[in-house]
Length: 160
Image (cartoon, rainbow, N blue to C red; front, top):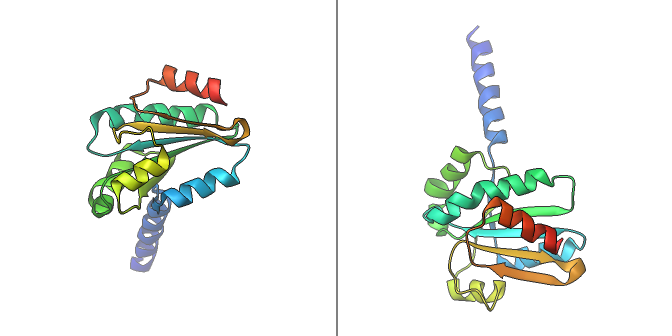
């Protein structure tokens, strides 16, 4: 009987862990590589941080966008710019608590100014920031603003 109970607990724990959203490290080079492989995909990349109130407010809009267009060539990527040391005690708990479904990454770059310049020469570094890339139409636009769902949907419709 003890064995049965322990086995059930183990299975439940493993199941809960496997359903938890993963947060992986990502470099700008890896992000660019992803753009290059997805010629037919529109990428909406949101740069955010756990300490940024406007970022947190708009996250549900990105979740809704991906969910609404799940059968279209759209990929919403959420890239946290929190310090790497915050992965376990801030970013992962944040993602779990909100049950985020989009792909979540923690930016793995050493120099803030270098990654800002690589993403867009027009980016001041302000958050939230959203990069939209459509390689089919040769579009790459950065927005330094908090999006409502209606605004985000409109921009996606225009650039897809």
